[in-house]
Length: 436
Ligand SMILES: *Cc1c(COP(=O)(O)O)cnc(C)c1O
Image (cartoon, rainbow, N blue to C red; front, side, top):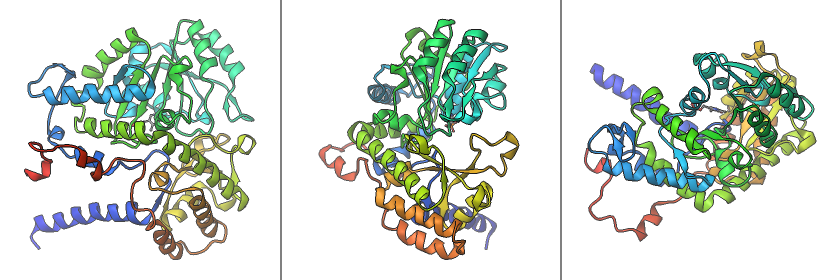
């Protein structure tokens, strides 16, 4: 075969096989992922993916931006409606870039921030190994309360009063119970600092009113990814309730951290926001029910599930200690071989050197919920996990059963669809693929 065609074959095969494997055959329990609905996808592939629009809507440095200007203002305002603020900026292309833009405004290199401890789920971008470190902002961790699996409020307040940080960060990547926003906000405000809440994981739960809105409890600024429990395209967002602070952050995103903001995200994010306005409460309610049910089912089958004292979870996540099943690395690989995709994870009592083979698994139910799974289906998933990890059945045998089960959940729920376009006159407009 001519070289071009052999490469082409490879590229097409790998890409299309991914679709089949991860959407049609596997149960995806990665807690930071999700899928867009069909209409969001329809607008995602558009001419906007070829364009630039540096600057803010209606104040750009480029010509040709009048349609993205209007769309971006609309998308910002729909996100704002869901968070109850009119200060929203969707230009950060990811949650990490959103964090960088905020951190850089809240503190200068050499200044001090107080962060939630890694045990309470802090993201790498909050640490010296990630974005805060890259910005030369020093950090101290709030003390952790093992019994409550959360930030130790009293000790954290004392620490903040003592070290007087420029800002504190709450929110994280591995957490099943909400962090104490109000108490930390009061403490950091009392020393003249700000509270930054990183809602990357829980944005969809906040919008669906199943997780507290930190902006209502004293957080000055919120950042998030737009593709975790909020089921939109990969991207980032910043929202605030402090106009002055928001203005400085908005001025920092471009030109410091973003030039091109991947414009095709914007209409897809706007459609996802519409879906959250229409279906968000039902979606979030089902996520939380499913997570709890998955945790309970796993526990009843003999797994060591964290957080029992408080009902296992209040988020989309379930944390399981699988040391008894060979450890996190081995368990995650066995599950993958059976088409159940999870990630191994450090648990609060793991030391950092265990990162390659931690004690736990982190499971997230937001994507399977979006595909229509309910509580009964969580029992099935728990059972598959038992067969693989406890009964030690050959994963390749179980893989086929998992795929059969997965076939029952092929459409995305809680979303707008093609039928909804019937109401709308579409003469004079076209999809990109009609042209190319
Ligand atoms: C996922 C995550 C991020 C990073 O988001 P990206 O969009 O992947 O850059 C930041 N903070 C937290 C808490 C996260 O979980």
